[in-house]
Image (cartoon, rainbow, N blue to C red):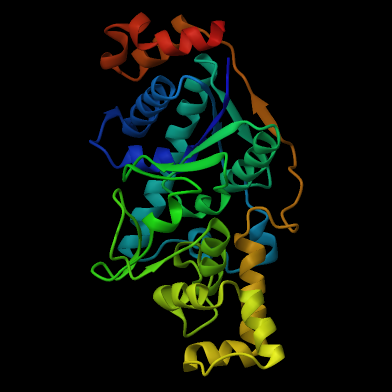
Length: 330
């Protein structure tokens, strides 16, 4: 009997799998497909008490409220780097179609909505499961999902082998002086100078510093380390702004003092919270929400693997599919 759900970030894991040894059938790359299937099988074997759900990206509603959101991805590629990234996105799109088909044949749940990203869907599923008292494990290397951690919800980055829970997050996530960036380490950092105290603090810190990968600018002048310093000193942005109004703020460094007085910077932070907070009231209801169960078809899955020349699977198909077969029969 399922004790909760295992939410798998479809595109994120597919992207990681695509970075492995190059495989192909003719001109069709296949390494991401094989890697994703292996990952899903291992996840089911490791967490048999949880029901796996693969969340897929739709076209994000964020494009409609913030024109700069991931803007470079929609422009014609010009530089060698842009061309390479465009080719990579094309490869992933082609391979995703095979992954969707394979998961249907293995009867693994998949969820998508026209207007939501996998992040948004993970938030919806986490809220509902937590309300039922179920456990949730988020499988994604995307640190944006860290904000979803709560007492019954944990996050696991399978790429870096890092797991964060509500209890361990404050000790294991923060600024690393040696690497000059925010890290989530496998072991506790006893000497970590700056740590994020909670999932909400992580979210507010991100909104202050911005997110270059999503092309969301920060409030200016604060940066990664400054954002953690800010949260550690004041607790939250609302506490900081209230103290500013009350006149109880201490003497501030310039990067914080300007945020206290600059309405434009405060508005940037509020905009970022709308874009980044996966539980924000501005996140719209799903459009054309699809939850696909599929139907277990081992021979059909075997045919697909033959087509893709996945001999490591077809060499002993019944054994490879055992965990999927047992779950489908339960």
